[in-house]
Length: 110
Image (cartoon, rainbow, N blue to C red; front, side):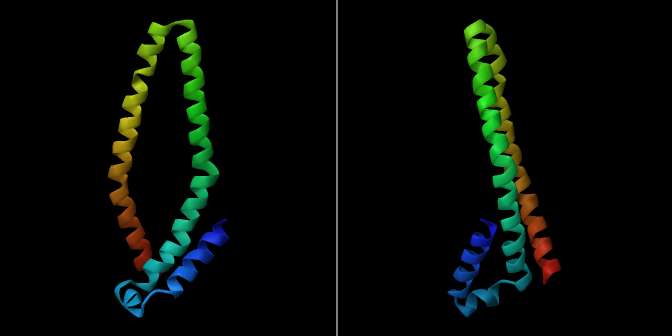
């Protein structure tokens, strides 16, 4: 899959104007081709499976909790939206740092 993504990006880049390459550094483009595709592989291999496992775990535990004691389930599972909001907020904050790191890697590659 990683090979197909890199090949598709390379073919897409072949169709771009030369002005695009004047505006973007070679190292930045190399960083996108290498690091972002590696991150995609990491996400699909590890994170996606973990996310599905976590979802099934929360739903399964929630079902058992509601079956055994609905009041305790409401109290216990009320933290799930708070954790989800914190995770969303944290990811938004980290996104800027990731952009800086990606830019640094692009400069290093250049």
